[in-house]
Every structure is written in structure tokens, then in C-alpha cells.
Length: 103
Image (cartoon, rainbow, N blue to C red):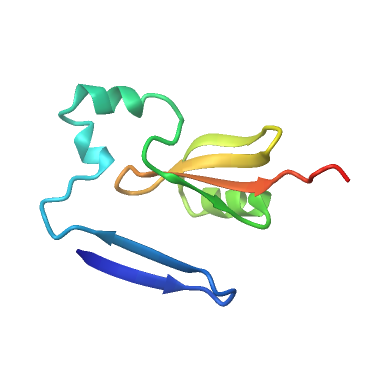
């Protein structure tokens, strides 16, 4: 497995890796797999994850300015304000800021 470790000033550590085999990301998988094509036909997180950020509005604006493929714009639910994007290999990410809890 090839791994990359990313560390931030706040102490969080993120490990990103993939096996040293013929890896095929979601974007290439949908080219020949009907089931996968159906999964990505909707703007939901299929194999991705949620990342909480301090200011999802700013994060969204920065992502749009950088040319990110946004698959669902900013939206609010009882738990959080969020949006979804897809990376270059087709993995989907949700970025969110938790909703304020009533006192």
C-alpha cells in the first residue's frame, strides 16, 4: 500500500493511501459497471466521507473558485449546513459545519 500522512497544526492526522495493485477509482468504474453508474447518478456520497470545517460557506466559495466539481450546493438540515463535491478520481466528499445546538 502506498500511504501519505498529512498532519495539521491542530493535531489532526489524515492517512490517505491505496493498494499497489491495478486500482480503479469510481470515475473509471462507472465506464463499465452499470451498478456503479446508477450509484453516481444521484448527488449523494457513495464511498466518500464527511469532513467538518469551521465555515462551510467560505469552504464552498473557495472550492467553487478553485473549479471543484460540486454535485450538490449548500443545503441545511437539522444537523448541519453542507455541500458535496467529487474529486478527480470520482470519490465524493461532503463538507459541513454542524448546526448550533439550542441552549
